[in-house]
Image (cartoon, rainbow, N blue to C red; front, side, top):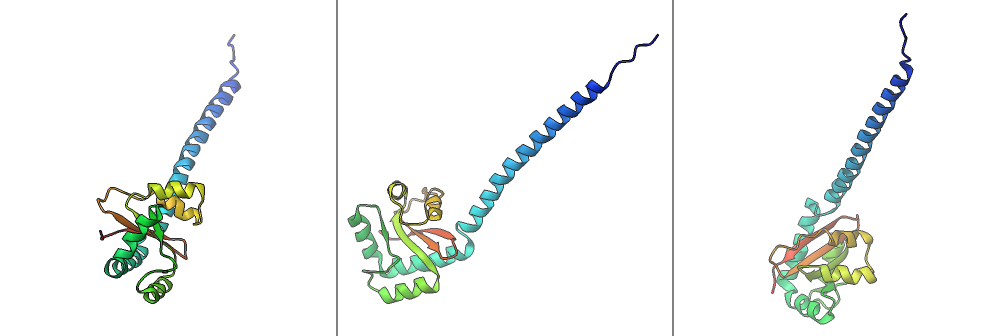
Length: 166
């Protein structure tokens, strides 16, 4: 007499283990995909080639014509930054407005190289977009420069360059 063992329980256990393994692998792949997608989106929106070129035009304008205005107003506001989106107070206000319009600029901020004070101030009251606020957290501050131009464009892209003044 041979005893027959019931193998159905073993098949059920084997299927359950394989299913748990596959779900685990898919979960890990999904979480990595989400991180990868976020980094890809940030790469596209933050410091894209076209926006860096446009921001360089703005920094050239500020370095050549408006350096003293920028330095005086960053220190005078106490906030550690100055918003020059309206071009008010600049010596070449008309040129500034034409440049910002041509480049399709939404916001221009000039700040100390380390935007930490600006981030802290915007945490309490943020008159700018959340996109700009998140961009400030990604800025590399180890450049050895004193000032920085931060630009948000109408299409949602952002760019930042050092300002060679002071």
